[in-house]
Amino acid sequence: MNITISPHRFDKTVRVPASKSHTIRRLLTAAFAGGVSRIDYPLDSLDARSCLGICRAFGAEITETIEENVLARWTVRGIGGANGLPGTTGGALDVGNSGTSLFFAMALASLGHVPFTFTGDEQIARRGAGPLIDALSELGVTVHSGKNGCIPITVCGPWRGGEATMECPTSQYLSALLLAAPLAPDGVVTEINVPLLNEKPYIEMTLSYLDAHGIPYEKNGAMSRFFVRGGSRYKPAHGPVSADFSSAAFPACAAAVSRGKAVLLGLDPADSQGDKAFFEMLRVMGCSIVWEEAEDGTRVIVEGAHPLRGGIFDLNDTPDMLPAAAILGAFAQGETRLENVAHARIKETDRIAVMAAELTKLGVDCAELPDGLVIRGGKTPSGGLVDGHGDHRIVMAFAACALGAKSPITITGAEAANVTYPEFFDLMR
Image (cartoon, rainbow, N blue to C red):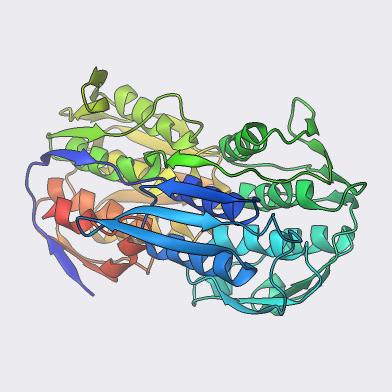
């Protein structure tokens, strides 16, 4: 599907959708809990639906409550009250486009004694899981995969524990092991050595779930070594899912480049999501950022600046922000450097190469670095046709770009936004 967005000032109040990272963690911990959990106002997107299907295949019973045509609640009866093991017959699980669901579910499926085979779409078929596969094998799990550690991937426990060493260019590998290791049988000990770790805020998020469930673990200060004993179980949990800073970045970016104003509702400044750092980036580049308390909760008010100012930004903790940050750089005076984010190349696409290529089509002076981008702004992007590459964050970034461009921008593959933000294009029109 192609969508054309014409330049206009973005001036809207936006209820930010729920966090994909939290929604998937809430679903999986509820699926393995003993008893019934209630997940209020989760993210209803393609990635979340992929995880929902996996949880049902593992044996969780999930009902949906709809209010005024909007998903209001998932009620999850977990498998922890039975034998606590995923599934009884195994089978094939399609993760769609969800890398988070793939990696997390691989580890959790390894707790059982029946084989599960994971498949997915064309993008997932290019995302290798080699380090995670090797670590699971070190922990006694039987794993078979396609070429370069890609799908189809079959895992079968039991999880025997021991010591595993795993480099983590994506934090999802480590989060997967940390979510699964406490559920191993009592007496099984898992030690994880991590010589490389990107995206540390996402590990802090995962550890916050272990803390909330009273699950013990040990780690060193550098997060390079973890020690987890088996025998724990997740508890039923209730409440709403936090709003998503990753999704909020795109209407904020739209306001910034169109000299507009975005009032963003539902964000929690105390949340562990690393992508809240995007709002500090906006402030450094000249935007007005105001956090205020209102009757309907916390609001973040973003007002664009003219001109935006370039700068140097380390995106190691926040690689998902590279597309939106690159758009800001295209409208900023001077040079913007996005650095220390080589792992953006192993997301749904090689986002460094894709952003450089598509910005160049719009007349932006942009070049790849081995670990990022350098963008020389000062010239408003032209309109034209850009390829969304089936990547939801690329698609949303160029939709925001269109609002401040010289003329309309047409984006191919725009349906990819449904992966995390199904209502996004209603905002942009």
